[in-house]
Length: 123
Image (cartoon, rainbow, N blue to C red; front, side):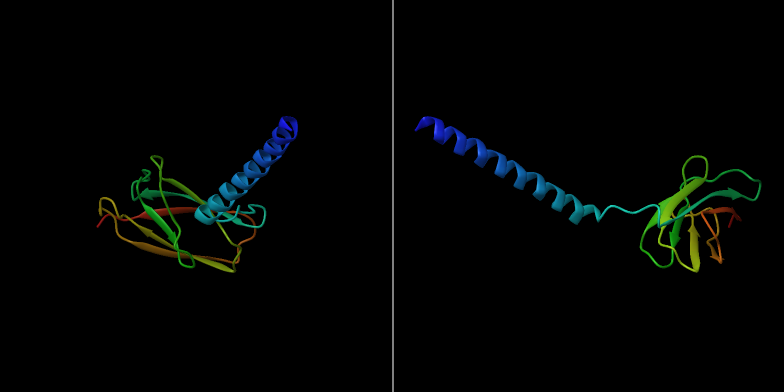
């Protein structure tokens, strides 16, 4: 009888482990969204510089159609993935130091990935 109980316990343990892994995957997807298919997305990258050509960090880059945004790194670079569209409205804003003027730009009719160089003027 002990042998049968051990086998039942072993299978029950495996079933519970399977449910636990499934639950973890569900919670991860609920929190972070489904995995992105980067092959169908556009890749937008660029660099933000001041009038003298120096890179600017901590500049917020946001897109009109989403609430997503990215912040430029220490080299003034940024990147993001977006869904394919006929045009992209990009908003550039110095939200950390407020030294630079806001700027908006629109990119349209672009094939492939997008690289943007943005120059900001001081206030």
